[in-house]
View (cartoon, rainbow over the protein chains, first blue to last red):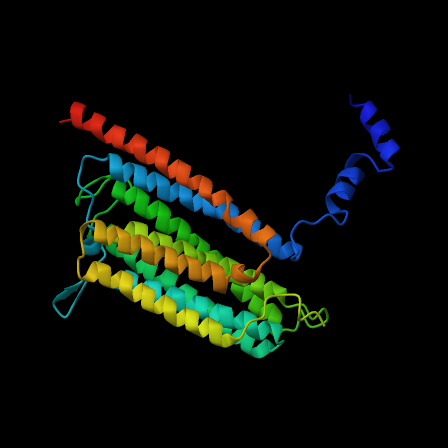
Length: 230
Length: 104
């Protein structure tokens, strides 16, 4: 079989071996009428969707199957301000911060296509700062849960042992995505500011970075609803 | 000049969607704040979640303006997950019942 393959390629007039593989995959065959960078980002986000969905599905499975009561997220994540218990306050603030950062990112994309480098970089910087403050608040939340509530991945004093493992796994993975996003945005913003994309005039990289950032916000919408509100 | 390559839309649309997302998030927070319980709670949470997700994917990620080949390639595969969720829910119910019989 191995010997007949080059023969076949010769009949088609195509190169064989590694050269042939590269040729076949790159020869003007495209299904998606967008740049390869954007298509690849979408495909990456699709794969990430499956990863987060697996986490959320396993969370659903352990939550349904446990016979021990599940800790009430509304109380666990509540804050006491001036003697009044406000449920889920920190999480609500984090949600609004992430939505705001999505808004500034969307505007950065708009300014990037107008080739307004300064405003683009500033809006991306604002997005990154909001993202960093989100991670900071998450660190605060983790500290509160680990130190004050005694919640561990293998158990906790409030109820079902699976609560801790689900919480740390899901929010930790999301927080890692936000952190990577902040670094990604800062990198692109500094390149935009330095005029790296001026010679090509193509600022689509900002839109692609934006896709990643909006995805992080999108995942939070699902985590907020399914983990914190459910 | 390749400024026509990407997705360009007026900033006004983004600001409107931004406001709408704020409004929907406030609503979903209020569901918890007023401690709405039972089926109404689950319906509200899921409906608000899907509305927010739709706005983010549709407008912020520009899916609304992409060609259908890309839209279907990205949005159809996740529907398989519904099968996984269905299977796991059935399995988890069974595990719960078994635990109720053997560990009480």
